[in-house]
Image (cartoon, rainbow, N blue to C red; front, side):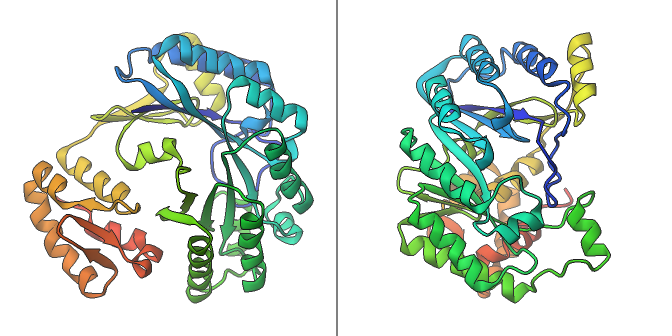
Length: 375
């Protein structure tokens, strides 16, 4: 299985928490689409396996016109072998989703929507500088369902300044009541070069403490699991048959090609990452100069990435598989794993190591502790 990720580096406005690569100026949009088409040609021999997933991310893909979307999809289908019914995910903001827009997306072949809701409360949305309201959030999901979309994911954020337990529970219940098939819920992280970072440094916002955030995580998992969602990755919950196939590629170390500025790629042996600057990307594509960096993964890198991606998922670390690939590192892992097993943060059976419910909340700490740092 292989996937293609298309990074659309434009947004109407900057959210106060976001450090993804984007521009609020649309002046180079047409040039960007042409450049991305040319980049697809550059990587025409990237994979010899069929493309099963295509993902429009960003940025805000929903600011694109239907012609731009068709151009990119047609280029992928002409360049690569694509299965008959690939999963094609399209990230969208609620305020962009009119009935007409949704019909166009469906006709273009988009069969999975990922809608950036973040919260169903207007005060939270205002704090985050989101472009939509609570009413628009609810309406966008209902419109999508009316237009025939039956695979809808939404994003939610917890750990927000001032987020009460009741409001967080209501956010989750709204998503359940709206009958979406997938929910990605992320704990707020304060990233440098964001408004939230500046506010946090100047004490204009106060973050919830660890216990409050843990309580929100527990409510999230309990409510969703009780309502038919499977907790298949730390931040991702899907009803049966509705996991994100594209994102599962990342966690299962399948090949994926990233197109556009700041996009990443993995071919099984090496990683590439494109320049994080729109103008530099467009210029390099036009002049046929290098627009990405690349590194070949060492055995240690492969081991660490396996730990990083697998332990976040319900599938966990396959002990037999890992031992076959990394005999020496596996012996070190067994020693490092003991304390987490003793604390019941990690569970073990004959085949797998998996995070316990408590371990999921501190997954990053456990994973980083298990990395091999020195050869």
